[in-house]
Length: 577
Image (cartoon, rainbow, N blue to C red; front, side, top):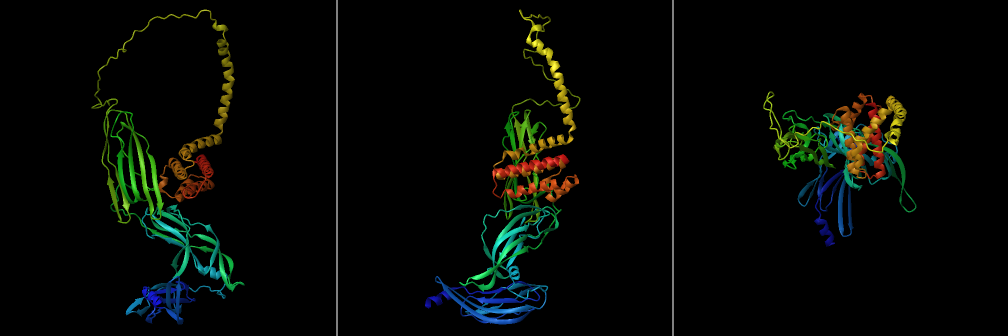
């Protein structure tokens, strides 16, 4: 007994408030319970239930248990209250005295809505299923800047009073106005949390990173689910086990509104291309001293956390004596609930032709930091490339001056020109009776009909406008998808290359930066070009597949099918564009 008393005294005293629900109709009732977890408390003072009427209580109860050497004690004060008006209210704190100290509970928020339809039978299975399961969309930030990443998480809350046997998403949410990417959930654990003032279990169904591409009020449409719920009937079987009844119900999350703030115009640098986050930027050269026709790599790298996939890197400007190839883009980007992080690199290949020393001017990279609310600009140093061997660059001081060079003798400048010749025919040979003679004689007679046949085939082929478009489109699709084909078998690299190929195709055809616009804008552009709706939908579906397929297990066969699908959709679009 002494040990039991000591265990109870060792507990930290705490007064907690809980409610049966924190959202109810004007015609419903609410149970409020205040619980102290330590003996010896007295002088309990209930809060003033303003805007509510007490219709039951207070009732007092005491519970005590001792399990595996652990002792728990609870003393509760319970009230049944009814709201008097609609609105959002806070139940004030209750207080109790223990050990010469006064403990207070936390206030509880209550939302009272219009009167709701309550079934005559409170044990109606549909009503119980509706009250004990909730589909909730949670937003990490409701007022982000354009380009600032936030996330939405869909949770399914269910109480201990019911069970779930089957569930299916019937309508996925739409993220219009957002660049979006699903966040992979590596665990399917069931967790516990407080919801509506009650203890619930919940599972995370879906989580997505959202980056707004425009300012203003953007809405996230609800997610809808069909769920088979096991509801207790209040009866038990022969062995005393509760009997349940299964009902199928549709659940819908609330529509969410995001108020997106425009990036400030004040202090916006000319070099700003849409980068939002926190970044570092540098430019490096693999070689600063080289020979003519020897290549050097100029690397521009942006690293950090932010909208890494949604802005362009600076461009380098080189003297015309340096041949520069189109940059090779390399992305190493991770997707987490806090946003995109990693690096984006452009690799330029520079090949000099003439001897000399050349300057690649400094570059500027600007970004907006949403936490600080201001712009930053990073400036690099000039890069100098020295070519030690190669052709001399000949320049003129002005347009009317001719630069003379000394004539150099190589020993072969002047040669003897032969003024006579002699032809000697081989002996014992008769060309006119040879096989070569008859072959050359018959060759025109054979080649003329062959040329006629080939010409007709070419005319038929040129007249086949649809076929020519098909063949041209097929060649174009193979050109853009050649990189993706190299990565077949490597899931992430393949889908990144496939998505890049689709964007590059539209960039070339529509002359727009498709990485800066949403799928809805792509749809509008294609519709303005009179592309068929079915082909547009197929193109958008392939883009969506690139987003989601990276985070789902796929076989090589499925990747080959996706490759053929992308090839067909580019072919169909090109025939119309």
